[in-house]
Image (cartoon, rainbow, N blue to C red; front, side, top):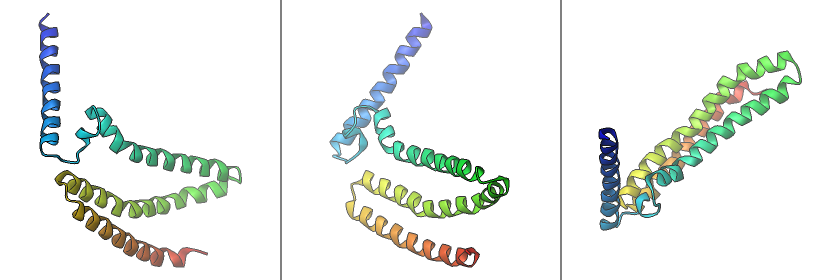
Length: 144
């Protein structure tokens, strides 16, 4: 009985905390996720599912590549394995700007500052362009 009472109190506290967050978001008229989604879980999933999908698609791409190249022979599969580290590094360089833009834009969205979002996106595009340029220069001599 005590365990059930404790669990009820804990659940009540969690629900009241979520309701307070929703009331604060509506009161301040923030364009936050609590005003768009009915639960915290739905709000988190709405933000997280693109990252989950990209991770799964990249994994699937590597698996399909390994399967197709493995059919060519052992030497070709070994070459792909050796080159996969460089490909992974290029993926990380590509994600560098996106991670920064996501962080800056989510912070600006929480404040309701749309001009800062536009500024962050432009900075991210310029950063991506610079990183792409240097990546092309570094990898160009190795492409035959």
